[in-house]
Length: 114
Image (cartoon, rainbow, N blue to C red):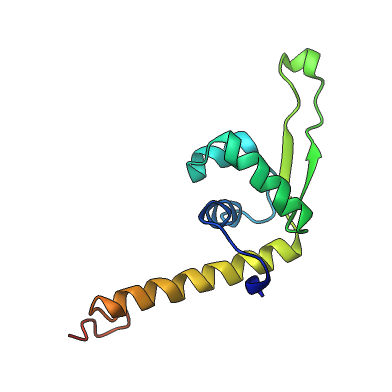
């Protein structure tokens, strides 16, 4: 499923953050501290994810003059985005287990293989 698109570490971190509450609407200002990704990397990644159909966005419904700040763009995962997120999470666990095995540790119950 994810083999068609290269998933960067930043994209993986964004997906992990969004999956903490998959139905929530997130602003970039909320996503950035959760992921440690700066805006110059975050917003292009969110745009790519939108083009892939993994998320949608809408403008926050406020009156900027009343709130004395600009509207926020609010992002939400699509069904496809949730599916990709779950696959990416699974692949990350597989990679983690493989790295552990190469170091002589079996993360399954029972522990060390060396």
